[in-house]
Length: 491
Ligand SMILES: [Zn+2]
Image (cartoon, rainbow, N blue to C red; front, side, top):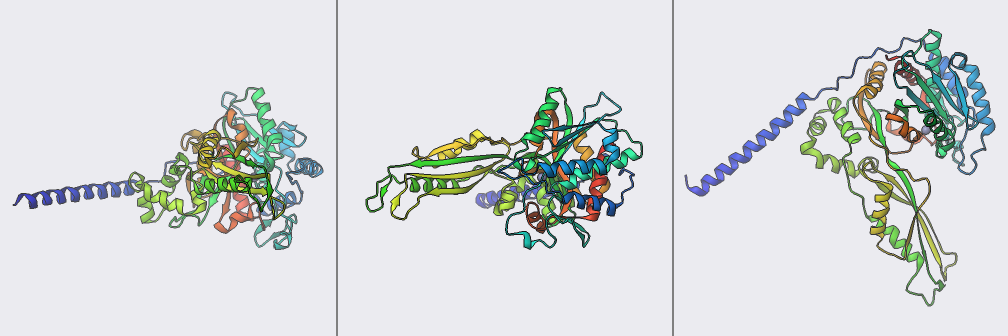
């Protein structure tokens, strides 16, 4: 064989062999994929009357416990009435579990466990709801505070966020107490009054109190991700995603000043132009893309339930990672899982068409991916703007991304086990929460922090949260109650 041909032959053989090895590894990885072995949990055997429970949730929706940005005290009377009503509805909880009222309306129950040596768990939820945007009332099929039950749903503000959790937890505890149940591990139930406007008076104060008392928690479970059906094409089951981390939050104010003057004799420095340029640079720039552990866990967790091409892709991230990331990057909803995202939201400059403004300002809201920090984002913004005449100020209230909790181990397994016991048809995986929850206030107290409320959502339901036609299925609500009861009763 001539040496040139021989070289080509050897090279082709080597490439062919490499390809075979790659394909074989991919095939083995795909075939070996198995649903993680969560400890088998039996669903709590409590009696749930779905219709009666739905009636109580509907009644809860009728309390307008609205958090308004402008006035934190505007709904004091509604919160007081709601709390009094809760006490009537869940007599065993209030009789047998000591509770404290914090900041006027927030509730902290401490359900003593039989084994004082075990660190407690804390179930968090919030009593407040967001307002109904003016002008959208008529778009609701059932008025937002009607608490109507129709077509198999409880309708109204708070039915998904987050009175289904507050009442779901109380229904579960009430039913267990009726059976004479006592938990092995101490359980805190913590219901804040102002989650929708920072949570500082509710969860913030509850957390401070627990910290003062030296409480160390095994884990916190708060609202967050859900049982998502139809979100991931090619997935044969709904995905129950347990949020193991949440993104951080920051708002920056950009500003520039100049001499102003008449538009007929423009000075070279126009503040409006400077801020506009800065906003454009930030919008065109991009923070790095990363596959963080919550998302990696999501992909590998749902892979066994995925149809073949997807299954092979998720099982072989060592090879397919760039492809998968490119896919995720393509849509805004999935890009948010990969990257710190930046949205200019406010712009102010000028009052008159022929007057150059002396001042221009913009606000930019940022959602920070685990791995980045408020500081690293600020540094990136400074560099990207590249103009010392534009000031950059961080607003108070910025939050770093949470640490990432374990997607395995005792606490995660309990939540996964309780989910699988009640929702037989789902794939459990970790996930990244892109919004803020009250859970951040408890981070210093807890070994692990999870964000999951098993409402069944389809893609078209996402807009119902904080939007029009918020509703929850009556049967789904019964599942949520049983989920909480199961979690409370796992030994
Ligand atoms: Zn909420």
